[in-house]
Length: 472
Image (cartoon, rainbow, N blue to C red; front, side):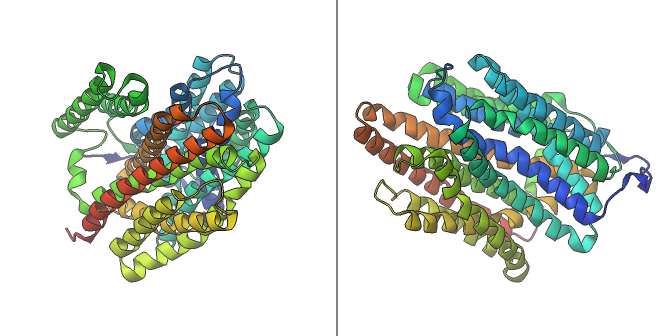
């Protein structure tokens, strides 16, 4: 895989110091990531609205954003490498804002889904570009700290979405959850245009067939997971979707091995740190977004919290992640990547298992302890695994490296939402009718979903630690 570096753009494009650039890039990813979580607070109001989505349709409304986000991140990283990271970032912010405006104005369900897809495409363009600009603007001795700040912003975005979404849904229609992102996108456009430097371009071939195979394979996999309870796990559409996903991924790998300039060279996964980091990021966000999807509904349906109380109830998770992210950076330097990431994944597993014991009688203080265990795990794991990926690719392909970790992150989030949402869908049929019966059924479904997620994180976490220990 070869690239050619174009002549550097003169330094006149740099208008701010590294700290200002870091703040702007972190703000961009925080806003993009917060939309994933803010959506969860609006689920009850959208379900009760004139759109009347079914449970499976609601899952698609939630997941189509992260699916498009995940499927386009690696191609978007390559676009940034080739056409300029700053321009790609500004384009992404524009598409993100336009998509959220379309969601806010959506008169029917297909328009809402289209808006979610457009905003997901915008997020895919802006997120890898932020990492590339950040690395370019940071001095060598500050790169690890910049990556840690960026990782913290990713995690904090989910929590900001919960808290802010709760306030909006409590007092305004569900459309406000999307409408608020339009001025945010415009403000970020102005901020990025003023502060971000122009990063030297690299001549990178755009692999459109590979990009299409990757996105379609992910879509087929999620279709099978989400529609399994609706059609039946052994039905022809669901089995066909899983078979199609397997075929598309196999074809994608064969294509990557044969083409001269693949969008993602499968041979990169021979690098143990890159492979382990990618899988680790995916399973970390699998566990975290299983929590984000279930938490908002659990606190409202089972505990009887208002939307504002629900958003505020998860704020301790944000504080914990910010504290433990610094511990993760220091731990990786002192104890090694394998031990630090392994401890983080073990804590996420423990947090999910603890959350699976919560019911209507669980005190908030105890519930908060469960959330802090989760925050400690994600804070230790995320910066360690992100740095393992970024450090494994050459500087000329930093956009691709950022896109890879972003794709792993968002695909993990999409799978976490799909798997736990499917568990809810499968169990909730028995909980219709009386409110107490419905709450008990929801608690039972939540328990099952959390335990499935914990099992996935535990099993995959063992493979991640093994990969990080490899020295080749």
